[in-house]
Amino acid sequence: MTSTTEPVEVAGPGGGSTRRRGRRRWPLLLVFLLPALALYTVFIVYPLVSALQYSFFDWTGTRQNGFAGLANFRDLFTKYPLSEQVWRALAHNCVFFIGTMLIQTTGGLLLATLLHRSRRGKRFLQTAYVLPHLVSPIVAGYLWSLMLNPQFGAINAALRGVGLGSLAQPWRGDPHLALPVAIVINAWQWVGFPMLLFAAALAGIPEEYHEAARVDGASAWKSFWQVTFPLLTPVLGIVTVLTFIGNFNILDLIYALQGSKGNPAYSTDVLGLLFYRTAFENPDANAIGQSSALAVCMFILIFGISAAANRFFRRMEARLK
Amino acid sequence: MTTSVLEPAVAVAPARRRRRPRRGAVASTVLLWVYAVAALAPLIIMALGSLRTEQDLATKPLGIPTHPAFENYAKAWSEGGFSSYFVNSIIVTVGAVVLGTGVAVLAAYPLARYRFRGQGLLTAYFLAGLMLPIRLGIVPVFYLLNSIGLIDSRIGLICVYAASGVPFAIFVLTAFFRGLPNELEEAARIDGAGELRIFAQIMVPMVRPALTTVALFQFIPLWNDFFFPLVLMEDDKYTLPVGLTRFVAEFEAAHAQLYAGLVITTIPLVLLFLLATKQIVAGLTAGMTK
Image 1 (cartoon, helix red, strand yellow):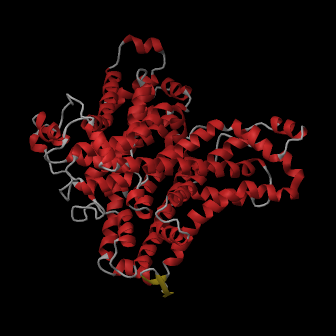
Image 2: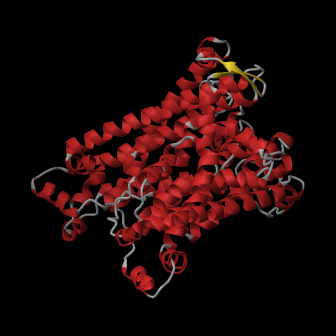
Image 3: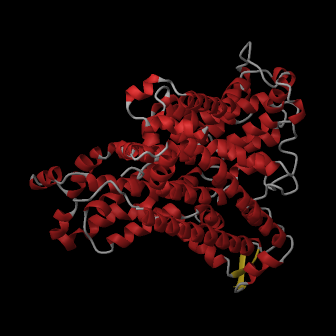
């Protein structure tokens, strides 16, 4: 995490001069710091801490009953239908993450590498790749729904137009296809982001490295894998962690494509949607307790795995240096 | 194939490269442009679809509008409710960006340039927010806003949004403030300028480029956000993304109008991007270059 939170390019000389004036500046500091501190604490930190507290209590509607220990967490994994939905949604998130990594990271790296050496239209191409990233996932979801419509959609029409009508599918309606289709749409939206990150990293690699590899008789392929790629490891680490976080937070795109239940037959249900339904579309009186327990589990999963992944990539980076 | 595609990078000597235009280079160019078409095609279909009539769309899924049907926009705007969604989106997004960036620039300044006890801890406290999945706090946020009378209120949503942008803004702005030279500040202090005046008249103008980046980077995700207004707002206060879901639920068959609604939701961001490509690209890759 620290690699994204620590500003790298600045060594701060500032500030030293004000040290002498010490003590008397507390009122001034408060003026500067209090607004941000209050806003951030009240609307971000306090709710997350509250969610943790909620998860250990039993609820009837909005009334908090007694301390429930881990009962809410137990319900998540033992009480039907939650117990079934949690595992299914988690599995879909994992498939989603792996699929997205394969398509988006490979695609992003390929585009960045090719773009790095092309000379004409670089700016235009880069813009084209990044534009889908700006679009709201809700817009992307509805746009693709329209395009994938079996009768009136552009995709099947295009397939028929080039004589591949036999490949036309009910893309969103087939439970086996719905999740892969969502993954491809997500990758279409996101591929520009790893592309930009890889492009920035490639631009930072001195040309002499490749020159040296060439003089030593390395083929282009070898030079890429042994010179360029190791230098991209930190970026790959960042991309992996950000993709992971993004995928386990996903909700909007699926909501627009398949509704809040992850149609058809829950085949695109993910943890984000399940959390929303558990909190706001849950017939159980203890909706708050259950949804808070789910929130805590998701928090641990997202935070824990991204922290671990970050450490892993740092170690790998250190080894490659 | 990949081997030959990668070749030109290694062959740095221009004379060598010029002798025979490599097949790899051609393949690479073709691939790049083909993918550019694939990336843009859905957006082009969206723009064209918004100008075609309902009938035209139903008979020919792929086509070019012969007589642009601007009435799709008129209908979506007035009957579809997009006028109020649009206004809500503007108010909420701009309000949150101004508030969030404002409080963040105030806080980032002492965090970067003063020395005081607890400074490191406080910085870490703010930056931890970069990693927090804040949507998971939605239930407590709901009850919090409810208890202070800010549920179904644009002000409530502005507060939540502004707070969500604070960590990133502080992260970028502290880096910029640290990089500023001391001389101007010291000169001003010798001339007797107060701390607030030094901040407002000397330091803030110097970080203006960073402020643009920060504002842009709060604007885009907030404009696109769907989850918070879905839970915290009601019908006529919906922002565009939630408005879209309501439009779809109500007018399922109005494809042309839906296309228009999608364009209305997207256009401000595309304009912003074309105006500020450089800042956006720089911001997306912030901290990547050493």
